[in-house]
Each structure stands twice: as C-alpha cells, then as structure tokens.
Length: 251
Image (tube, rainbow, N blue to C red; front, top):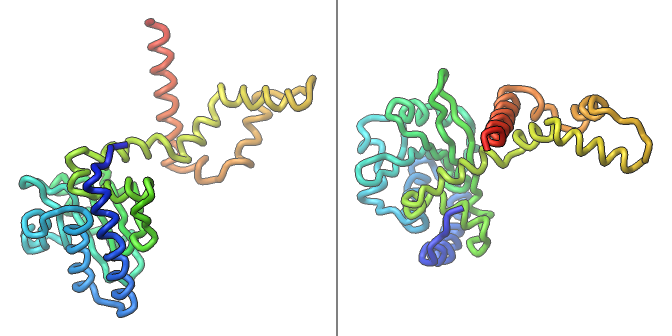
C-alpha cells in the first residue's frame, strides 16, 4: 500500500479527534442534510487536505448534476460525493444520482456519506450501470494512531490522489477477498492438499478428491459458491492458473 507522508499522519492525529466531537454533537442534534454537507466540506478540508474553495465543488458548480459535492483536481473530477443527513442510514438507492452522473461523465469513484460513515464505491461501466463497495470508514470509530485506520483515511486524501492510493487499494481488494479465496480453495491443487492432510490424520484412509470437493459446499458459505461474484472469482483464478501454465511451458 502507498506510504503515508508524516505530515498527513500528523494532520489525522490533530483533526480526527476534533471532528469526532463535532460529529457527535451533530448526531445529538440530528442536524439536517444541509448542515451535514457543511460538516463534510470542513472534514474534506481539515482532515483530507483539500482546498475547499478551489477543489471542493458544490452542486451548482457542476451545473445542475445530481450530486452534492465533487472533488476536483486540476480541473478534473476525481470523486463524486453524495451526502445524506447525519441521522440517516446509508442505502444503495442513495447512490443512484451520483452513479448516473459518474457514468455519463466517466468518473469512476463515488463517495456516499452521512458524515459518520464514509463509503467508497467504484462504478462499473456496464449495462446496467452498477457499483461495488470498495471501502467503508466509520469516522467515529477511527483511531488516527492506528496504521489500518490511517490507510483507510488516506484513500480519500488529496495526497492519496497523487499516489493513486484508491486504485492500488482497489486492486488489492479485488484479489484479497473471500470470493477469490473460496475459488482458490475449490481448485484441484488445494483439494489435493486437503485430501493429503485428511489421509495423514488416518493413514491408510481412502479419500478421493471427489470426497473433498463434495464436502466444500457444507464448509463454505453459500454466497461464495453461487452468484455472479463467485463466478467472476472462479474465472479470475482459472485465468491466472492458465497464464502460469503458459509461462511455465514457454520458459
């Protein structure tokens, strides 16, 4: 993952506790969406390092689009931000307006936030347009001294954009996730390893690869075995295995 500059870490340690207090007060008062937008704009400036006058644009600044805020660097929109009132739960349908705008303008990254929760979504430019949830940050639970929390905050930082932090993180989560791990577990080499370990528990025990494969649906959760995401993960693993075989054959 990208290295986080010390000045950014110092900024997190200074500003995150301050805005946690502000957000808690706002939750107690159950502030409306407009007031939440104001707080979010201040967070973008103080915590994430944007110039709120030049780099944080409002709905009017992007000419009637249906997105509350956008982060614009050197004239190019990097993130669209949909803001909901701090007391509202974030729901998938809240993304629709931002997704439509992002799809039309070619902006792949959308943030959905109520000030406390910050969700980063990546638009899938397919038919129909959809989005995948890449990262969630609970601001009130964030500990700015913890490395993992710093890494999540950095994804939205001005400095993180220059280091392509979100793209790097997205590449990581596309590979290191439960769908891909489940797909790997179902491959012949891993089934052979499990068969060998079972036979080691009881020497002479007759266990076939089919015996192991038949048990996997009882071990793994249904959602990592069925559905489009599980299918895509298996295809990814199969493509990687074939590529490795081709490389080995030509070496």
